[in-house]
Each structure stands twice: as C-alpha cells, then as structure tokens.
Length: 111
Image 1 (spheres, one colour):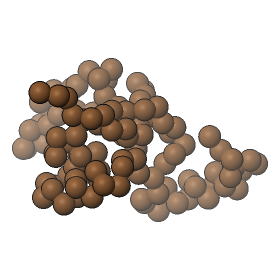
Image 2 (tube, rainbow, N blue to C red; image 1 turned 45 degrees about the vertical axis):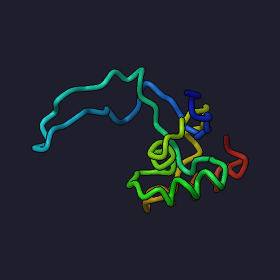
Image 3 (tube, one colour; image 1 turned 90 degrees about the vertical axis):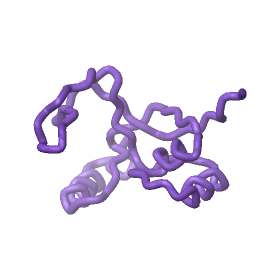
Image 4 (tube, rainbow, N blue to C red; image 1 turned 180 degrees about the vertical axis):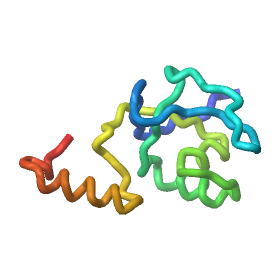
C-alpha cells in the first residue's frame, strides 16, 4: 500500500505565549495537559491544490479548517514554518491590530 501524498499547510510553532492548551472533559474539568513540544498553532488560510480541496469539501466530513477536511479524505497534511504576524482577521481586536501594524513605519512590509 502506498502512503498518501503529502500536502502542505502553513503553520507557526511556538513554545510560549498567552495560552496553554488543555484537554477537558464534558464538564469542563481539566483531564490532561498535552506536552507543548508536540503542539503547533496552525494558521489559516492553508494551501492545497484546488482539485484536492474541492474533493475534501465535497467529502461530507465536518471539519474545523481545510486541513481537517483533507485529513478526513485520507490526505496527509504536513506543516511548514509560518509567521505569527500572518494573523487571521476574525474579531474586532484583530482588525485594530492590523490597523496599528499598517500605521507603523514600514507596516505594510511587516514580516
């Protein structure tokens, strides 16, 4: 049996920050704290070939992002280094953060 092709998704890995990830049970009680070295913060948007992404979205699975849908159809998702500054604008605070970045000297060229 051949292994599935490798597809790339941009992500950013960090070991410290404002959040700690924990596994909780149905009552919200902490069940365990995963080892941080095995965790990455995966950014969106993610990059996949258009035909694969269409198949993933047509596959009928529920997912939190494109990568989880590709996984659901048997795709192997690999990560590549990303930038924390490549931030998704979802909430009002994100938009204000982006405006501050753009207003800063050299902001439109920020890493």
